[in-house]
Image (cartoon, rainbow, N blue to C red):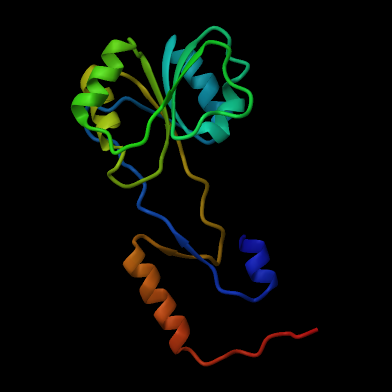
Length: 173
């Protein structure tokens, strides 16, 4: 998107909540990709709660010595880990519910993407309380030159600034 916007001389804004930060008691293992997360999960445990979304399941499809509980809003339509149970569910989730889920499935590792915000705080808190390691897939950096807003209100203010700016000539070919 950044390349296309720059090529078309169109301003681009990334709406991105602030990332998570570990708190005392967290056992976080940050990684840069889903492929790294698959290796880290395999090294840390045998019963993995995978909450990275259905689009990234292929990175775990080769992991045949670990059981996965895959929570997803939509059913997976691509390769999945061979030993997986799919739980179709949509948040918000409660701390009590996340505690019960981790206990019931005897989860010993959580794998998640750093989506920022507070919506997923209950699963992180439940993992912390249970002493479960968390593999956190870091977000890729925002491309250079792309503006960032942490909240919709900031994005709206950015748009207002653009609307107030004088028109700039564009290449018309």
